[in-house]
Image (cartoon, rainbow, N blue to C red; front, side, top):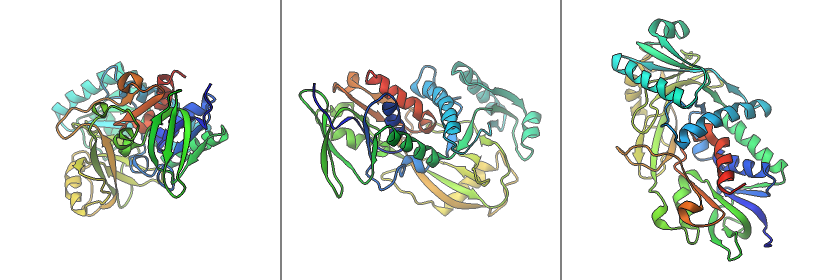
Length: 370
């Protein structure tokens, strides 16, 4: 039987890559997680809404629906056990008019199909009793939605990997991998201290770099690699007192859940993200976009004062659909897709990937037969 340096190599130390490493380590494998940056979670995982999603919207039978609900339950339990800060504050999905109210009914029905707990239909009066500054005709309450400390979560995952004898190798970019004749892979890393190591299993979960990493695995069929797109979302922070205790979301827009409100764990109000497609990762926040935000937010919070929004941060989502195209499911490609034994490649893991991360890790382990 072949001897390997590690049982498994995971590419990418964001939330999903770390969760994959954790799932494999929990199954008794020796694991190393490769990260090109000097710290964990520097990409998609550090520039998002830090929302724990209930699992309301996603199509029946999809990976997104199943893994969000299962992953959300796992996530709260993990956060409690590891003393990571969170607030299960609940979420209101609000409708501004009769058409929006009809859309809420469809969302409620989908949430029931998806097995989401704690859902309630609210009249306008019931919604305003919870959040008096809200403007809406009707609302849904998702009691299981919340916010959490995503960086604290990733640190806890890293700690679990290392406690199991694994490693997270920072400033260690993945360069290439080649399947070995006897099974497993030779993996080449770059950076200041280039190396080659061998492993039985390879998992690629590098977020925005998913297509490039897959293309550097020898024998990975190019035609199976989905086209990648950068979906940029900007956030604005509210100056002054946060108006709502709960998350507030309008009904979703094509390709995203829409610009929403959250009160972060520090008690400040944040609005975002919007969605635009860009040619390359660009994390600038255009102050002129505030005008668009004011108009959108005042549909559900007419009391938003002039001058109260300040630019905060931007994130990039690793989309595998372009503008105007339907949003596809998560892509978790095993040997049935690319023909390479022992390899699982993840593509398009955007929202609700953070909420789903522990379930994604278990799914990857299952795809490897573990």
